[in-house]
Every structure is written in C-alpha cells, then in structure tokens.
Length: 267
Length: 365
Image 1 (cartoon, rainbow over the protein chains, first blue to last red):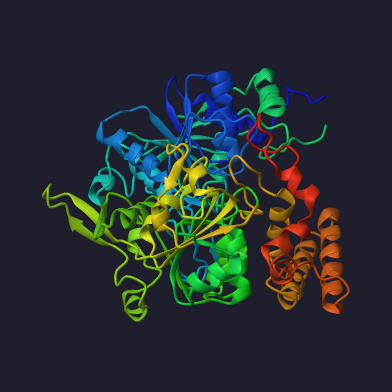
Image 2 (cartoon, chains in turn purple, cyan):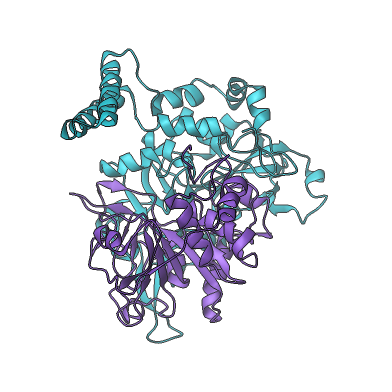
C-alpha cells in the first residue's frame, strides 16, 4: 500500500488550494489540479463550498475526475445544467450585487509581478499573429479574471514568472494600484494569491506586487527567489505545514484513484 | 413537413463552400463529428468559422485546409490534447487567419445572434491582449466578406457617461450543425443535458442541420414539451446518425472514446509522413545535443538512442508513426458513410462507451 505520510509537490499544491477555499464559497474550478483541490475541499476540508464550472454546471460533485469542464462526469452530478451564457451572467451579477462569495481558479503559461496571466501564446522571435508557441486561448479565464477574485495556479519556474509577459489573457492588478480601474475593470476584484509547487504568493495591499506568503516543508524562500524571474519580497514568508496522511489517502484513494491528474511515484 | 435527409444529402444541400458556420457542442461533448466527416468527404471549404469551445472537430477542418478565417476562444480536446495540434501548428507556421475572443464574449455573441441584436456591448476583455491585439487586421477584415470590419470598439456607455464598455459585432451565421439526442421529422429537437450554445446557433443560422441519436415521430417528441429545446421551423434537415458525436461524448448516451481521442492526440502531432520524418529527425538532433551536454547522464543517452532509432526508421520508411492524414484516411475517407464508420468501430467498442445509468458515464470506455 501507498505511504500516506509521504506526499508529492502536486499533492501539497492541491492541499494548499483546498485550504484556501472558505465556508460556503462558490468556487469556479477547471480540470486538473484545481479540481482535485476543490474536490478535497468539498469532501474533507470545507464541505459547504459550491464548485461550479464555466460550461454552466452548478454545484458539481463528480464521483470520478472529469477531463473537461463540459464532461458528463460533471454534468451527471451537479445541481443545475445551465448553458455557458447563464454562467457568464451569474458571474457578472455577483459583482453587480456586490456579493463577495466567489473564488476562481485559473492557470497560465506566464505571470508577471501583478498577477497578469498569459495563456494565449509565447512570442519567441515572432508575435501574436505568428507566435513561437500557441496555447488554447482564453476559454473562460478572461471573464473570470474580470469579475471574480482569483487564485492563480502555476508551475514555479523562472521562465514563467517574468517582469513582463508577452500577452495578457487574464488581467491581474495590471500595472499596480488603480490599474484595473484605469482599464475599465472592476477594481474590487483581482488575484488574491498564486499557488505553485514551491509556495503561496500574495499581493501587497499597497503596491499590488507579488510577495511570498508561505513556503512548503520541502521548499524555502531562497528556492522561490531562485525560480522567480523578478524581484520578489520573501521577508514575510511563513512555513505552511504539510497535509495529514488522511488528506493524502483521500486524494489517492477517493478523488483521483486513476491518477488522471496527480501521479504518485511507485514506492 | 418531412425534413429527414441522409447525411450525404443534408450536407450536400446545406453546407456550401464559403459559408459562415458554427458547430454545436463543447470541446469533447456532443460535437457533430459525423457531419464533420461528411463535410471532409464532400470537400466544402473556405469557411468563416465561429468556433465556440472547439476541439477535434475544428482541428480536423483546419488540418485539412478548409478554413478561411477562424474566430475562436478555445481549441483543445480538453483532457486528451492540451492544445489542438493542427490548430497550433497552423498558427505557429503562420498558415491560419484567426481571431481570439474570450469564451464569454464569443458565447454572448452567438447568443446575441439568436436574439437578433445589432451589436453587443460587454464589460469583458478590457485591459487584456484580447482587445489590444487583432489576429485579423482591419485591412484584412475589409477584404474578407464574411468577417466583420472591426473586432471590437471601446465605447462610452450611453446610460452611464464616463463608463467604458466594449462593443463587439454579432455573427451572421449561414450554417449551424448540431448533434442532439432526439429529433423528429418536423425538426423539433430534444437536447438532454447542457445545451451549450446549440440552441442559440440553431435559432441564429439561416441553414441548420441536426444530426440525432434517435429519430422519433412528431407526435412522440411533443408528448412532454418541457423536454423539447428547438422549434422545428428553425431546422433545415434532420439526419439519423447514431453515435454521431463519436469520438466525443453524448450526455445520457455514451462517453468519450478514450482510445479514439488518444489515437487522435498522437496522430495529429504529425501532419503526414514527411512531417513525421522531419519532426523525428529534429527531435533526434535535440536529444543528441542534450545527451552530449551531459555525457554522464544515462537516461539522456538512452533517450537520444531511442530518438535516433525512431528518426532512422522513419527516414527509411520502415516505421512511420500514424499521422493526422492516416487518422483521417482510417476514420473518415475510407468510410463512405457514417454507417461504414460504425461497422468499422464495431459493436463491442461502441457498447463499452455506453453510459452506465447509475453513473452517467462509462467506466469501460
């Protein structure tokens, strides 16, 4: 049997996600790690949360890990099957009603110190029209980053954490204080944290720049600075304790037994 | 009125080269693949596309050079292929005229089309590259008759002076193709599960082809009108095409064909045999360089040897991996009809895809 006292970087990341979901929150998830984290929250850490997906499926509680946000695995185990446009309207109305009960997970290939995210393309020697590497494009991320507070999921690498990113798909704090308002975006929404395989970054109240808030038992502030392509304040960093064996058991045995998103190395 | 057609006749009559077109479904769910295959066989091309959340459906059309302008928000067989490979290759080679909107905006544009709106104001894409960069320039747009002259315009909200909003055009669709669970000869449709943008495009498009899992009588379909989602008068043709969303899912009926989507993922990496040879040669050179840089690393040395063998085998023509063209030959062009495809897939393979009623998906797929 698998040893639940040892956990992988990704399992720590999923646990960090789950720990940051609060009571009764409406949680916008995609597939992959955020879904594992949200499933963990729903089952163990914070059962009162309501996972929803951008295809319009509300209060999802899948049995088996879905592969896409439109998957039958979500669709057959949710409260309401709305079309995508209702999801968009719901998201916008939450902001219009000044509700503060939504949190969303988005990901990307590049991020800057203000939490602006690129999931469209990397220019290389080219440009937007003919880039070196093309990704899927926005999907629901741009709208989510417009109207909702977000938690950004990234792999912590120097080439991904850059002072200036090629293309902004999903807006963060733009160029700092007041940046969102100047762009016509809701100023009282924005990225709350960045969860990576090395730690949890938050954004300074004054400057809106990213700083290291937590590192993990297997990482350190130095590792975070080494793997970040811009100056990052690590002076406020605290240690986040790892998960209990029971959490790891639930991830491996109940949530992702097929290891669709979290691979467990063989002992 | 009886609108029942064969797949061949429906596509021959209602899909014309140069159409502005949209397919229903969501990445790997209820995608109208049977109709896509028929279009590929018949040869229509030069489409101006409003793609919605697209997957292998539009990836195949792009790979086969049938797209004139591709207006999109997301293209991937999510969970199988992170970025659709022919879409990606076409953009990286500068071979595809394309535009990005956010999914929210694009879906609202399709909805606006169903409402008959003249244009659409949104509070989305502001501050992002989606507004700043245009995939299709103003000049190019003027030369493309089915593409709007502008991607978007920032305007002042007339009801809230000082508030900036974004005006976007509303698509004028010639053709929509959707796959549904049940339809009747008069065109009435039942969609089970999430309708996605399917109802919107069925209302908005001038010509609508519906492929269905089950063709039921006009009387039967209206037994419970809470279940019907599309008015028959919106529909031009109804086609019986069981498993017509294969290899994608169909809610209440069947699951993704795991093997089919994985096969497409691998095959679509290479356009054709020449492309496979070139890519494998390049990969071998890269692996050799990586191994040479760290001579003590046994894993890198083994990887380089493996890559070298694959490149040599491909160059000699002894082992060439399956390519995109091979996949289409196997599952599209060598099948004269959708029925041929089903026979080729075989009964057992299709039965394994059937949803298990207690779960709503298949554990045997």
